[in-house]
Length: 584
Image 1 (cartoon, rainbow, N blue to C red):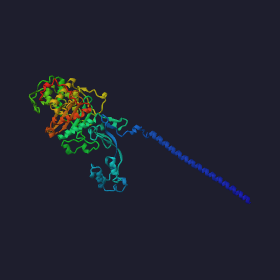
Image 2: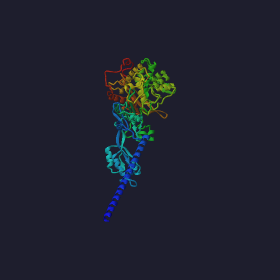
Image 3: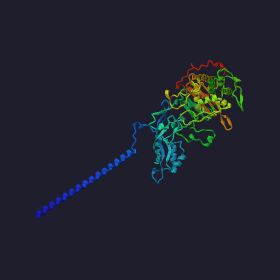
Image 4: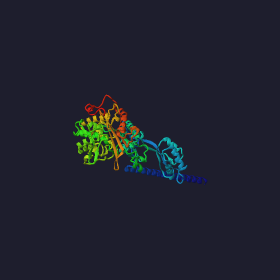
């Protein structure tokens, strides 16, 4: 009995163990099945996501290493590779009122105290304005372009709401130099005003740009031009100045300056728009380009163009011929010379003494249609040809020129153009007679445009002689730089105003070319409303203020451009010197 009971107990235990093992195995199988099912679902979801991204083209964009290393905006350089504008990693100062959490005060200190501490770091900021912006509780930039050392000082203030995000900024390493050529980049990253606007698409798109965009500007020449213009402007208390250096054969602009200038690294609202009271005084914003956008009556600088047209047409054949230089009336207007030099003058004397009467009589014989055609061929009836977006439209006399209009245009009145118009016209007058558009792009030899013929080559040769004589014997003597063979013409024109011309307001211009025996560069220097001062011997005309600027500029830029002083060379004036007494 006992034996049977023990045997039954053993048999029962074995059955329970087998049952337990079977249950455990079944449970393990179900667990493996569930795990496999979960993995299958995850894999299926991943495959669906991959397919969706592929079909919807939402996958990541592949970028080459070269593209990844490119800055967000391309670089602009001068013709020699000197950087003028480049991308620059910088900090910004951002006010984040929610940095301390919702409901609490965004600042530990008072807005006034924080503003005072920021003023100590950035002296140029408006402390009251910053305090008001901090107190308003609105997020926003307090300052763009913060140097690393200043960023550390801001963080030392201990306010979490003053954040310093890293951003890519536009930096102009030459400061204000060539500001009107370059323009600036606004807070949205868009180029404005100058070549930043013109080249905006190329500079933003890595596929369209190379390592840099070279301009025709030579920064050394640009610096010298701005320096001499500024000195000349301040010496005679002029309200503004403009200047340009232009290659006579290619149309490339080596330098272009408008004063007063602006700082593209720190553009201000007054640089773009002036208050009404300033505008009423005749002032213009600093970002306004006087070389390409403002039109002026440029006075006697037009006289050589008129004489060239007359020589070309055969109206002036004999330069020794005496012309009547007496005042005369046309309708109710009297044409006369500022400083009469006798009853008659020949053409070289008329240019040397800047005679309105002789020039007007030459134009009268030339006729309105032929002078008008010459001015059209020189582009005087259209906006100036250059890439900049700001280009002023000339005040053109119209289709049919009356006799008086023809005469006044001949000596630079009744027509208003930009200084760039004048520079391109002078280039055509001395380079053999070919007009070419001005450009701010650096050109290779094969890229120089053919241009259009305006004057005969023989006329151009004669004009080189006459322009040189003006600098030797006439109103341009203060521009004659020894050894550089400068030639040119002065122009002093009263500015028009309500009810007529304002006798107290002049635009003084000197249009120059050097070296005259083999012309290479046109130089224009213009002063807007100069005053008579000690520096100009109390004179307001171009001979005393604009011409000296050129006389100082040419020796500075000539050697930089490969033109060295040489007193053994000059224009051959043998056949003309007898026409001008030595005392003149």
